[in-house]
Length: 281
Image 1 (cartoon, rainbow, N blue to C red):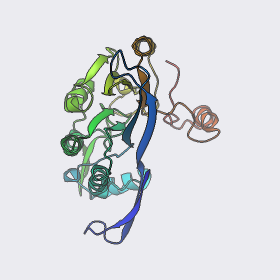
Image 2 (image 1 turned 45 degrees about the vertical axis):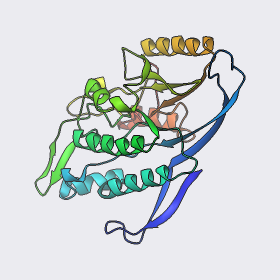
Image 3 (image 1 turned 120 degrees about the vertical axis):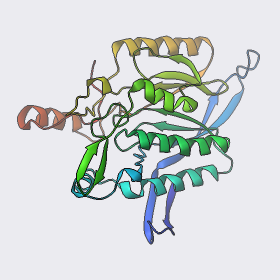
């Protein structure tokens, strides 16, 4: 069920219609075994997905020439991202029957600002306290991002963006502390969000390659991570578990011909062309 639009009566959002198209309550039916003697029981599991919330801690600033230039280029509702996310999780927690867990497959924050991550973790604590478990994985904006910034009349100044270990620490209650297996080569992990169901949370980001000047958006799955994934798929099959997976980067093109456009931009124009598609490692 896609959460529909509504008009929010809020000083920041007066007469503004918001579409929560990223917040989707999904229902799946799967054959899961609660124990070794119950391998053929059919169990329906309800879970929610909120993708790409791009939460921004507004105390970092919402004015100045650099902020205005950013929102003109990125076309994100950063000034209102907190209100939007608050409304999304409020409506999620009111769903009846309640989903068992929430998946957030990356781009939790605007550009990986520590303040934005901590604010996101606070919201997710509310969701978890309501009885809905939460599992996250990073997106290309979330880790070691040189574009993390604070804004004001002076322009902008770079702020701290957590590295991979710090990201896992912030989100320890939301997947990283509930793992069956952790990939030593990435922020990927395996968890069991419901009896008989394995979750492969796949990190395809390239944050290790970011520099002070450049933030890599495209993704890839490392060969070592792929081997780890296959081992865990085999383990799940041997244990009679059903499997779902989440990853920030798409496995298919966002639109027809995207790969061709990417190649053209790179070879003929010299523009950035890492358009959120995973590439071979």
